[in-house]
Image (tube, rainbow, N blue to C red; front, top):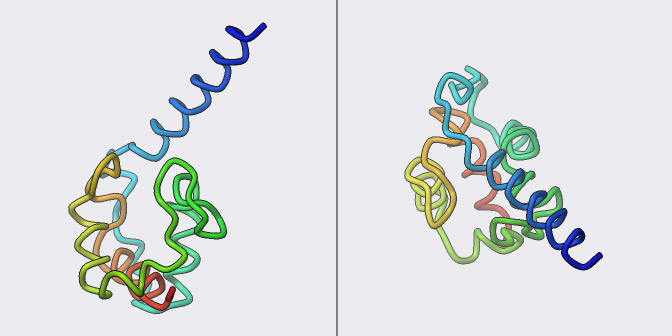
Length: 108
């Protein structure tokens, strides 16, 4: 029973990492929406919440509740573009990355 539970949990984690770690750039193009905090929140929920949590609490990725106190908007944008740790590069592009960075920079 314990082995079955362990296999189930491990499999779920691998699926989550695979979903978060997908770096197929054909799906990660800029939406063309203008840079704004409100677009950033919406895009975060669509592209980042799987790993970082809908409330920024961290799931597979780290908590981002106070990320704006640690990093500047530009630093956050660079992390989105370049990736960090198990986070792949290019999850969001262009104005989408800028909007998410702008929104996350307000989290202090």
